[in-house]
Image (tube, rainbow, N blue to C red; front, top):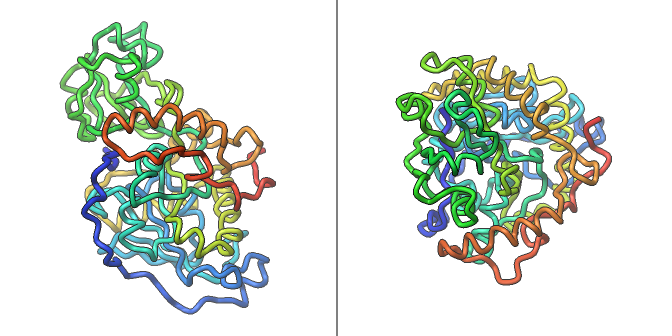
Length: 385
């Protein structure tokens, strides 16, 4: 099962400035790029656009793997997939490199990788992580939000708890709620009384073993795009439904898996991002509409990496369906796919800043939405129908 990097506030303190290297710098095909109307060479993009994810290849990253053209290569040592960066079925003149996260980067936060290796143009950021680092030396600016709703959930056995419909309902049951220690949303749940501090347990390790052993008495965190399908259709020791609620719907409304970069890279590649971000928006749209080809790339990478991550076509297909069914991938209130709702960011800062401050994080004084996200590069014409 997937194990996400913890939202720790001190993990970046020991960062080195040594670059990881290894990016493909092959000469771009500018002739083909010019013919498409999307010429990322002319826009000043690097020869290889490096994008850092937070986990092994999976459908949640499909919007990025959608960018990869045929003839791609898989680096089984560094766990990266590289190919022509495509737009409208044709090359943009540059390469794109999708880097695996999680075990591939020692479970480091993506923010740490962005600062360790400036050759990474963009990486997965979350609004809560951005808030927590806004006042220290590692701020980030997010430029596009392919996910409108964070896929993270708290899940339970509906047979054991038939009256539980929401995370808040679990409080009265006294059920143990397992989560990855350090997750900020749990500090929010306990500080606001949504859950009782006595019932939460930070020992979750990504394995279903404890949930199975409890026979339905315990609850745990998960992802709406993964665990509900996996537990019902794949996990032989369970093979039945789980109930769940998204943490977003319980009040922790951070954006997740948005693409962001260091302020220095955002400024350096300003012209590039004006051309690149709409391509990423369109890729997110195209992926949910027709995911099969891209899912094949994802599964090929999983198989070639062979690092213990188990993922199959059924899980990928179900994840895409869940993204749409639960409106995790959806237009923002302004009607655009990939834009940030600035009012939502403002409200989240008001909710999250006290939580992070209480845990010792350095939240920027007077932090506002424009400090951590921007819609500057968004094409408002790109939207789900």
